[in-house]
Image 1 (cartoon, rainbow, N blue to C red):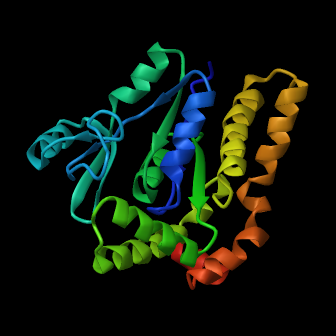
Image 2 (image 1 turned 120 degrees about the vertical axis):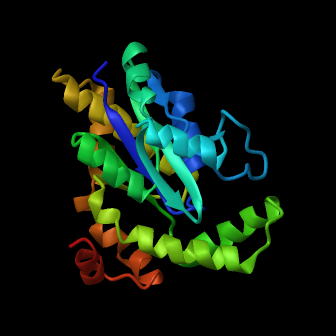
Length: 238
């Protein structure tokens, strides 16, 4: 295995977790990093499945001991990727998938420049708001303030899309899942140095369509729905 590190980020409510679960079900030799967090579990979340839930004191102790590949504070809660995931992926002869936010992605890219980064976008602001409301109801957290805060955060996160290699618009789940799988398999094929098979050529072509440079026109309306323009995005990256 090539030991590729994949980074996937998205605003809360974009469907990233569902896509990651689909990917892990169908792609072999892909180690998934379970992040540590100081927040409480939500809904049906279980310790060791979505996150490892620890106390603030435990988290800060790990951070002080340089135990994280990256860490960030979001909405007053700490999140971090344990350093050991890189070694574990190497031992298992697997690639590594990191499900982290834009802050963490920036830090990992600095440490691992050849990591493959993927940003998942909702089809529009109104659709994201609808998804957030449905999720809040299922988690018995019907707080208008929380929803507004997540939408505001989504807008800021979306401004960082230019830092990513690939863009996925999660409008139709199966199509988005196929595109994510194609990106992972295409990068494996491309970095193997071997002539691609017929199936690998299909993955390479589908992944090519998702490259950031090929998605600019498609995402203009999405950016506009969040009141984000391309010039504003470029200015935010300076």
